[in-house]
Amino acid sequence: MNRALVLRVLALAAAVAVLEALCRVGVIDRFTMQPPSRIAVDLWSILATGKFNAAILKTLTNAGIAFALAVSVGIAAGVAIHGLKALREGLDPLFATYYAIPVLAFYPLLIILFGLGDAPQILIGFMLGVVAVIVNTLNGLDRVPRVLLKAARIGRLTPVEVATQVTLPYAVPYVLTGVKFAVSYAFIGIIGSEFVMSRGGMGFEIAFAYNNLDNATMYPLIVLILAVTISANLMIARWEKALLARRGLA
Image (tube, rainbow, N blue to C red; front, side):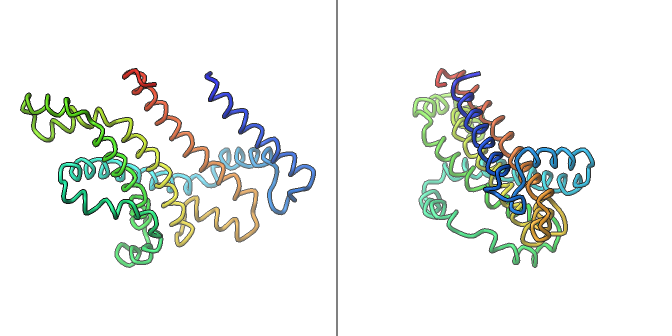
């Protein structure tokens, strides 16, 4: 276990211990929040009973679809845009200001277009994540050494072969940064949409628990979402570190 990981674990443990103490001594009253140890017990109870399995499955499935779409479309769009200088120059200002746009504001329009099903939620998650993947893909492709592009031209590779065999493999560490953002943005889009208007999902259950002062449901589900997103990002980070180590850059 490296020093950085040890420091992260110790910092997290210290934060949880302080929060536990504040709850136990009454600085944070039980009406506002139960101690982390109680949250852990409640989370175990929820998972053991399977009470919210349908809601958890719904959210994870929709977030997974939104994430997969954002990554696949984002990488393909990044490669296409990188090869078209005029289009790149036209879109760069949009990419720079994209996250100033409240994407959730389009949710009512998407409901009108696609109904009250899962499609509007998935589209919100996709819209939040895809630009992060595009921007980081472009960032990686901009750093491909010219010697590799010259070698590809000498080898008479097609544009698709250049992308799949030369530029994207080199840009993978940068692309993975966008992928990590896409994980978080996909969950933000799905959970936020379920908060606004939904008939199921973890976001709906959290909002319902909040409105009914049900801390025994609200906080454990929030912790579960954090655990899933952090775990996914840690796995991607390990993959990224392994790729950098292979290139002698770790």
